[in-house]
Image (tube, helix red, strand yellow):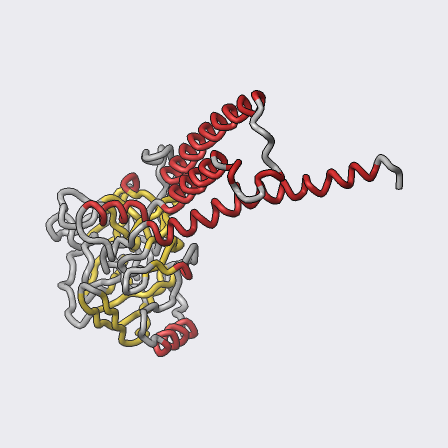
Amino acid sequence: MTTDALPLRAARGPALVAAGLRLSWFVLVPGLLTIIALRYLLPSAVQAPPGFLRAVSEWAETRQPLLAVGFFLLFSAILRYWRRVLPGAPLWVEPPTASARAAGLGGTLLWGGLFVLAAALALTIRGSVFQGYRVLSGSMLPTLQPGEVMLSKQFAYGARLPWSQPSSPKPPKRGDIVVFKRPPPRPDVPEELVKRVIGLPGDTITTYAGFASINGWRVPACNVGPYVFVSGDGMLEAELFLEFLDDQIYLTAHAPAMPEPSEPYTVKPGEVFVLGDNRNNSSDSRAWNDGRGGGLRFEEIRGNVERFLLGAHRNGDADTALFLKPLGLDVRGDGIDNADLQQGVARCLKNRPKFTSPPRPGAKP
């Protein structure tokens, strides 16, 4: 080993320590603080008192990615500002010379620019790529429970600019879960609704006891078993059914009180017919147009839901176990043993029907 290599190796050790400290203070610590802030700083929308605080918490729950970026950059900037007093600072912070102060100003401007860029990127992602929506009612039980936050894919039916409609919206598929703005004039329902697509343009839809028929062909359904869901708003007792529609398999709830049969409705071009999975408690296509039935236009659809963003426990706490988990056939319920229902789902899957697609409009079922 030459004598020139000794100073090089001696200098490499402090450099690695300095790099490790920078990584810890500007990446790991801000990330940990961000997780703590999202978990404990923001109150649950379920537990927050009515009024401004609940409105803020509901807004925050559906914007977790945007808030995470903001908190991370904020904590990083604060730690950078106070970097000279942080533990281990002498190992990686240079004395405040004139050139260092100038570099510090440039660094501050750089951090400000990065914050603006990250905020713009997060807003763009939320408006045109992914967005979170909080479930406010039980109309999609058992698939979606009140309080859960779902992740909507905003580009599923066509590329779009932030907060704009797709230039040429594509039709959804039967069985898709879609998010859309409430139909006017319905101030008594949430601003954003989530329902399942049942009928496509040209289909004639009728419903009896909550079960749908498409062009005279009844959607196959298998009885899974009795279902109970308890929430702060009351209790739902229903029979669960597994429905098979095209390539989609999903659960629906049917309470003992059967809804009135609906009049046949032929879906118009550029529209779909939508139903809630909780067939006895859902304001959907059956109720629109003064109960005569109505379709949802393609351009009114904001996105497609395939995954959870956050779950919700009965006490209002977030359930991170559902983070980015795909929607499935799990029957969830705090403190309720649903093993019998899961066995019923498995039984129905083993005996799935051979034909799951309806006839074309005008053809015999």
